[in-house]
Image (tube, rainbow, N blue to C red; front, top):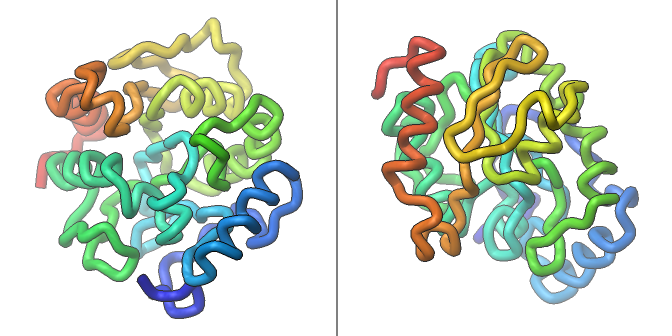
Length: 229
């Protein structure tokens, strides 16, 4: 794994938090702990993964929970380095939202097509569990992330925390768009489709199957008029 300074350049995230974001003391302390343990890892807020042509190409935004310790916190790219990314990127490729080879590292040949990926919480939380204050604080980055996508038409939210934070970022009440796997709602002119998170725990327990996950993206691709690649 390359050090952060040697990572390949990608389309810059216009709503990125600073590398040493101090807003959430618990998360900042956890980042610094892992910088001491693994100085070659990313260990910083993780930027939104954007397509090569930039924000104007994005019609679909995928919102996850937060970086995993040995996933995006290590590699610096959302859903890269842990099981959740294997399922997510395979599904995005299947429905025409990505191309190239996903090799679980940020210098692979994977590219997004008309899509972007971000997290409701940009820093890795202890035990993968951000607290309410951290979720609320990080929404100040989710709001402009959405606003910076002029052609955005649909959002897929992965898990209840990502879903609820996205609905709140759009200025709507949760009662207007309650979370459910496969649920779809129109909020602030956008189609919001929700899924259980594609974590190994959810797939191992059968809470989420590959077919269930694919159904969510199949519906969104149909809404956007995207043909599978």
